[in-house]
Structure formats: structure tokens, C-alpha cells
Length: 114
Image (cartoon, rainbow, N blue to C red; front, side, top):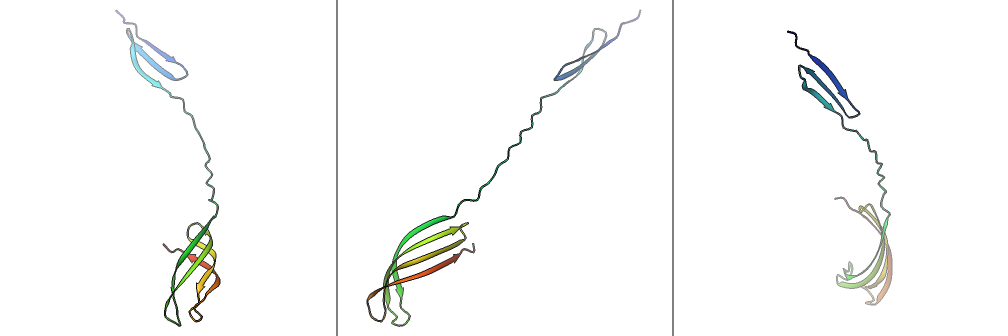
């Protein structure tokens, strides 16, 4: 007596299946997931320069009179990448010779190393 052996392939969009034998059962199946490629471009903008305005008060040590002398000032600063600061300063400072408060102005350049 001869036994009938059958082999069949079943396939679709997402799978391939093969069966064979007498009263066949599943031999193998391959399931294909849909692949979707998503591309997203991220543009990093350089943050704008930040301006700051500060009011300062304190004391300075006089180089000729060797006294502590009070001062008050205001400062306008632009910060570039938090490493370089450039600013202008103006205010009043006690003159060490005349002992009167006199106006002063100046420029500042700061560079952070760390």
C-alpha cells in the first residue's frame, strides 16, 4: 500500500507557511512584520546672547590711602556661551584723596576657564 504524501505552500502579504506529509501538519512558518522607517531632522539652534543688568555695592581698598572706600555701580553685561562676558560699568566711588564721591565708568571682559 502506498501512502499519499502531500506538500503545500501557503503564503500571504505577511507570512509564508509550508506543510507536508500524510495528513500534513505545519513544518515551518515565516511571519514578516511591516517595517517602517521614520526619519526626523532635529535642528539645534544656538541660544541667543543673554543680556544682564546688575546693581552692585561694596567697598574697594585704596592703593594710595590704604583705606576701604565704598562704591555703588550698575553693570550691563552680554554673556556669550556662558564663558565670555563683556560689560560696561558706571557708578560712584569715594575718592581716596578728596574723600568725596565721584563718578566712574569702565569696561569689563571676563573669561571663564572652567
